[in-house]
Length: 494
Image 1 (cartoon, helix red, strand yellow):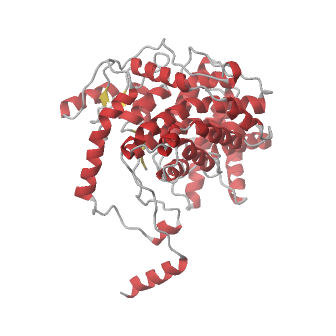
Image 2 (tube, one colour):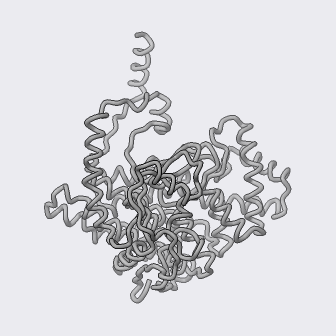
Image 3 (cartoon, rainbow, N blue to C red):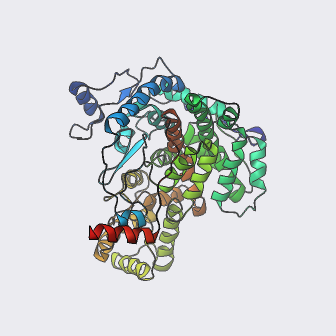
């Protein structure tokens, strides 16, 4: 956070890079097979044929976008002209009154969620990202900066390009003093997400998009002003988030940034955690929480608000307020609190039968078992799986991790027995709190802020493409119950 509570973020330059070889666009079958071999995914039916690994000669992210945008604009125009009247499915009454579940109605380029296999970032699964994205240490977790490059360009960056992006983020990471003053105006015990969202709103004063719009910028240049705001926002939110944490839990003693650390590692450091394994965990955490296609509450909110040409700061602040809800990002704090309640009542060495009884007690009490189920997924969340693998590698004997493992065995059969749950499997929230708790970040109320920092990467990337593609104001049609009744009776009688 530096002198005067200011901070910058920089990239660790000591990382070995396994993906620095220049690559060309993978269109042919032979090139695709080479990439599959590289990923050890020869049986993967979901190709990454569009992937391009970068030449290290061009390190400027914005210049890559300038080259890509005209091609993608033409692509969207072609889709609209050739397929504009193609139906994507039928809308039922259940969808209208059931939270629009299963309704296809949003363009989101940076990631795609499959009900069975989970999230893919620009076509790459989480295990594939762990293989090809540059890491801070050999064989380590992917750097969030690399994922940001991937989300924006659809290309796997070289280590040199990630270093250059880290340098750009560092140059943007200074937070004005008025932001801290705005946060300090709140009670110190205000919820961390309230303080975090307040800080983001205070950052909006510097919006380049707002200034450019007021000065009459042409709509073809909207994406450039959005790029400026989004990159600055992504750079600044770890600084604001760390300030909130230190203010609430560490007597306001600010930890200065470390110029030798990367985005995720420096965020951990500014929070006050310097264990190398915690730095690795934060890199993994930020990467896997960054994006989860566009239909979730925070992503959709950010897209919706930005469709009114609200700048990225306003849009992301709105997204954070959605993320703060118990049915969305707040769930990760609820998981750890619930697990600790199990330990408090039954002890750490709880038997399988005792755990089953406690789960039934929770359900019979009209509550949910937090960390299980998902609105789209129908199998175990890959984000849960990679965190479990991290735990097996670094903390296999931790009692809380062992309890999480038991829950993995106990809860899905019980939820299946209930017969009301489409997905009884654990999601990303079922594991993250236990890992953070192990390395000393025990304040569960703060966990959603970590989620928010991560989500800035996905939402910010898509907002740039929203403006580059000229996506319009979002305005779906709503109806009343009376309209539904009349319509359905009319359909039934026809």
